[in-house]
Length: 308
Ligand SMILES: Cc1ncc(COP(=O)(O)O)c(C=O)c1O
View 1 (cartoon, helix red, strand yellow):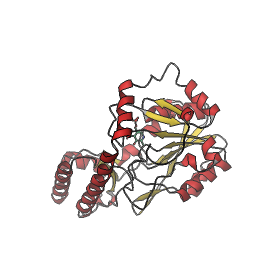
View 2: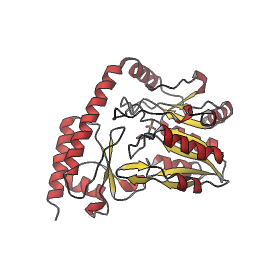
View 3: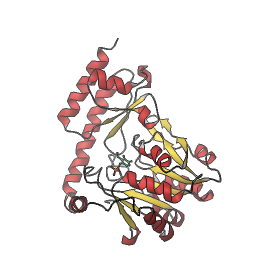
């Protein structure tokens, strides 16, 4: 973790990957019959977690505000009933790339406190902020309620491209919640891999300069992609505030599944928005060498120009 938040060592529960933590959070904070509020669109394993753990789920639809995916606070509060015991938060957001600010987090925590809801905050993209005027704010650092009623997920896999070394930190300041979470790992969740731990330690210790260069590289990739895609009629992309994922609005193209068009006609591998629960969009990963990005843009432009 590279952004400032004083945590104590004993709050940290290491798990082999962030998705493991999402599932454990559902099992720990929710009894059978209880419900999690999950943002939508969202990285699909969030949706799967409640189903995997046989818990309830309601979707909290984010609003597309000129390309920035935002929370609808009134709608969020309306979703909370006596059985709603957890809210999933993803900040920075995947797929939208929104960096939720302190004001937004404060509002969200107020609502959760009013309804006594635990928050599971996946902040795995937090070290990839692409705008100089933005900072990541750790939800759990907001106040005592947030601290005592949250599970924060952090890890090196996005920042340092270490997905092959599964490792994530679940940070749980509340002792009782943490002990329940640890109990739920017993016999199911494997120990974390030694090599993953060594690789992650090395990345955090020695890759500071590399990380700075990475951010500049991603900023430039985002700019190039934005220019390239916004030249195409029907596509609209304002760019993520963080991360390497482009959430491209294709609704004006009239394509039912734009992802299929990108894959089959441009030969560019993307995810269709439907995987995240929102049709009419695609998600494209621009965390790649510039040459690959430029070729992808050319292919996409060509495919759209040949569309009749
Ligand atoms: C928000 C978010 N959470 C979790 C994951 C998956 O993390 P892991 O591979 O550590 O399970 C991803 C990967 O794309 C992600 O974007």
